[in-house]
Length: 184
Ligand SMILES: COc1nc(N)nc2c1ncn2[C@H]1C[C@H](O)[C@@H](COP(=O)(O)OP(=O)(O)OP(=O)(O)O)O1
Image 1 (cartoon, rainbow, N blue to C red):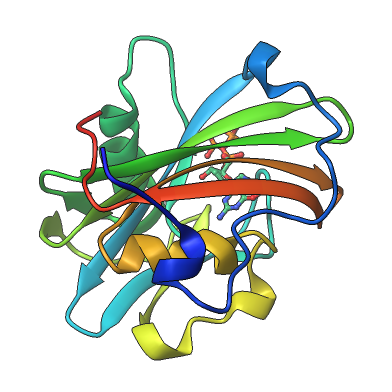
Image 2: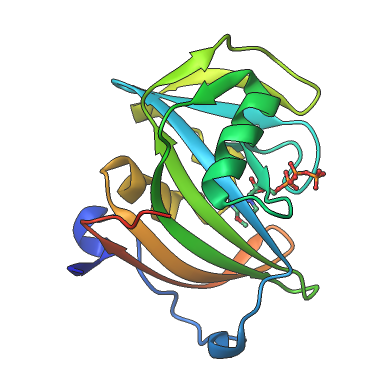
């Protein structure tokens, strides 16, 4: 797999934080697995204002935690349907991010995108969806890490990385991206 620094795909980002890692990532085991699924049409991205769960109040992509017996792709399809009423066709896996929070919680998040879907867009108890111009993504209202990796995903790259957050503040990150993507 051809790997590149995120710097080459998104000059504003830093692929690694200046701080050293507070964790030994080789022993990382997630408490939960979750997904994000970004639906795309030319020049536009479907985002949500999340109403509940981890990151309530923030803008994000549709997503949520994997249930027993589900693959991450199954979860991407189910959560997108539950949150915004759309059923993505053939979501594309574009990597996974390993988050560790200062309170000890560890969450691995698989990233998907999709360019076709069925169903009707609707607001739900979980999310207020809206189509956002791709050039106007409201990063200041999103998780702090998103500006580091979402641009690479939107360029079609696959991302992998480790991130440590204290509350909402990103304290450590190490991100890699590649031109090809894994099927997951
Ligand atoms: C820390 O950085 C994060 N960035 C982004 N963009 N998204 C994140 C980050 N940390 C978590 N997430 C996402 C991943 C998932 O989509 C949700 C977490 O799942 P949630 O709590 O919404 O899970 P559900 O199964 O929907 O909810 P319940 O457990 O309440 O049923 O956050």
